Length: 304
Length: 279
Image (cartoon, rainbow over all chains, first blue to last red; front, side, top):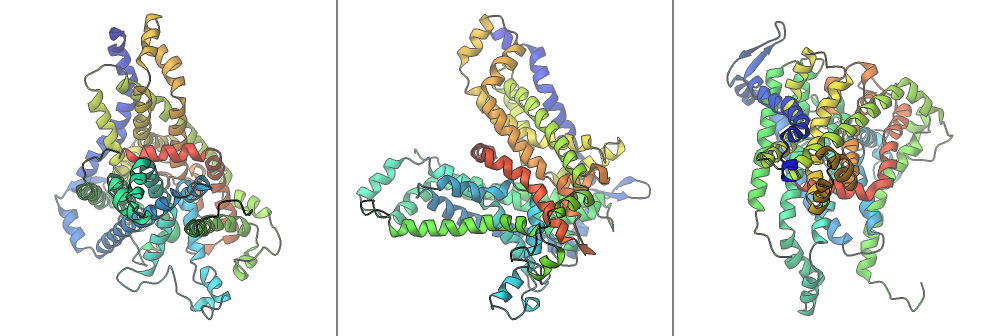
């Protein structure tokens, strides 16, 4: 038996396809990407000229990059905080009811599996200045005429512009199911006897939540939050399908859309070097965010 | 309600009211897309939230032909199904080697694969695009399948490793005594036993790739090779908004996922949760 399981030929046969694929499609490109980030791509000669940290220096002076960073950071903080609050609230309430729990859970999770591209089109229409929600508000008499309502997706005033808030809330709507599921899985793993003991000692439900549930799900908060952080830094589909090519004029770029535009858009694209540098910033931010969150929520494991 | 039934607590009622409100927020948009998809363009502009004046199911036909959704749907199906099959096969092979075969580098290999889970696709976008353009894989569905497969593999390997590890040792031992080859053990004993895991990973890879936009947008510019999400984004351009066609198109894009999700929601929810936790 041992001989069978140590069969070198079989091991290579089993592992090689995945290993080769990973190396060729993931690891070599990552290293190439770090190299490209230090280069300037010349469209005419299709060559990469090594310019050291030039791209990163350019970044410091680039106003669009500043906007993209600001928006991505806003997005990161907003989604971490809002998903934590809403996810915990939904999970806490759902574990308290019996009938319909599965139905509610599955419905709230549903948008997570639907195409962001499709849902983005829907929300872009609903927040259209003339025909969407403004129309509904006008019918209810909250605003005078549809055209006079807030220009949801076209306002460019303020530090964090209104469209950014709209997109952030839509993202919360779409992805809160994920956090809810993670918290629910963790909460249902807590032993019932802990709660019973606390009720005997005279604790209220709210107190039990504060002193039993919260500390015990702390590790999961870390996991869910790092997922949110990475997800919000990678955020592309929804914003692209809601705003399309308008991100630049509306100062709505996030890192991913700016990377896409510098690398591939029809006008002014093909700056592969600069786009790779943005990619490097993105990866570094992802790692940094995960590290910080894990630091904050690092806990010893309780016996459950 | 009958008198002898236990009276519901007010707090429970409040919770139910809250969740019914949430249901409305989650279901209403989808129902509203369905309703709007059969309206005429003027009807949409005049009364976006009302009941349709008349039902125009031909919108679907127009959207299907004008938006080239037929070919996009076929492309999406092709890419997703091939990726799904390859993910399940290659992923479970690698997972079996990690969980059951005895070699020194098994753990190192697992770490190598799992690192792939933390890398955002944006980071490899440009090198991959340049490389694929050089070897003629841009604008080809194979060029899309390769990265999709690579990014679906880590979750599959992770979940399947768990399944293979939990398998009783005796099963494999007795198969050995019966003189089975390692390949036969894998294909006719281990794989069938882990079919729940296979099913879950297959579903997840299918859903993720069915919705993937960024890679498809970058790699494919030929109309005949576009996948469904890319075709969808072409319905609204700065110069025209074909809302009467956009809504049927949205419906066409989300109905398959909704059907799959309704049938297998419990498996999907479980799978995505376990798949997410490892990160």
